[in-house]
Length: 144
Image 1 (cartoon, rainbow, N blue to C red):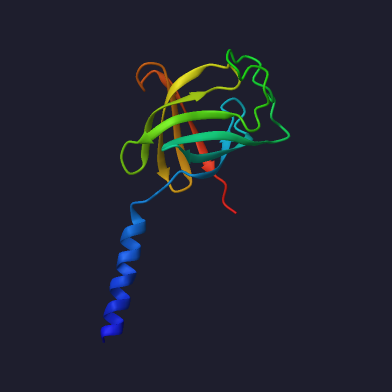
Image 2: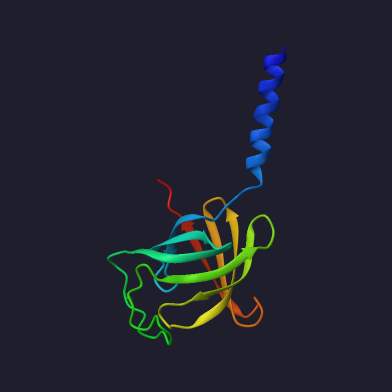
């Protein structure tokens, strides 16, 4: 009886501990807003205590491969390996904010917040000033 009780207690502890720890770290598909097709794979990762994302892979149908409109040291650099989102910190269990995101097509940078709507669906909002003045994009986790 003690073994059964210990096993149940351990199982509950494992389930409860893992329940609130939904993490956006991993590989994501980026859907183009104009044609609805997947153009790239993005890697979301932690570095120095903040959440970041970089372009891991461009698919064959990607129309932009260099950041031609960037105004900083990213100008004319290849998108693969380029950091496009940075500085996000936790703002609740499934939300991160306070960072920046870059649109590789325009080279413009925006404030950014993200929310894990489902385990495999990430809501990415880029905005100027306040979130009401921006655009939302959804990234979908690459599941192997």
